[in-house]
Image 1: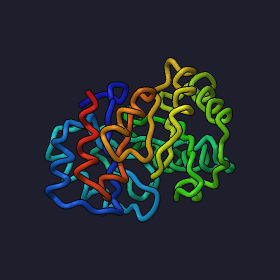
Image 2 (image 1 turned 120 degrees about the vertical axis):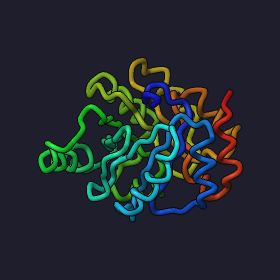
Image 3 (image 1 turned 90 degrees about the vertical axis):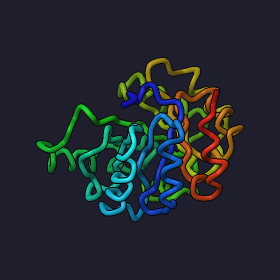
Image 4 (image 1 turned 180 degrees about the vertical axis):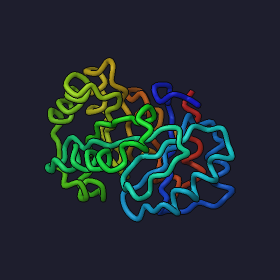
Length: 225
């Protein structure tokens, strides 16, 4: 298992979308550092279990990004817990997390939990609308990143453009401010060139949507070096 701080490239698989068995095999054998299973809507336990059972045939590290408590299951190496910093509702920063811990505390593998300070930058994204976000300025985004590291001591800051390619200048400014919190970038990475561009400033890049739109190009994003 690769620890999260060593991840450079990650594929994200959505339980509500489908790839062929051969394509899933390619993803698992691609050389990616980890696979994240997660999505915004229609995430079911059956969908999660279906992906997990396929991925577990391989040695690749696998994490569940928790968006639906009913779809959580044992068997993952990590459980990533989003804390949406630019949400206008406290619910998405601590209330649903508190409810889960209150209800399932004795069963939660706390050593495997990783809190992610999320900053969602695409107002057209489903997750932006679901969590009732406010669009950050560049200064806001940098401020959220500094909060993640210096105030909340979060291990991960996730800059999420969700389906559209982000601004490298924003990512560069955030990278210049953080030294201990890991920067994960996701959004709009379709080609190897996109991956290399964002990896200049992010510790970890996530490739997700393009697996379902141009699989061959998405698979090539692993070859960062």
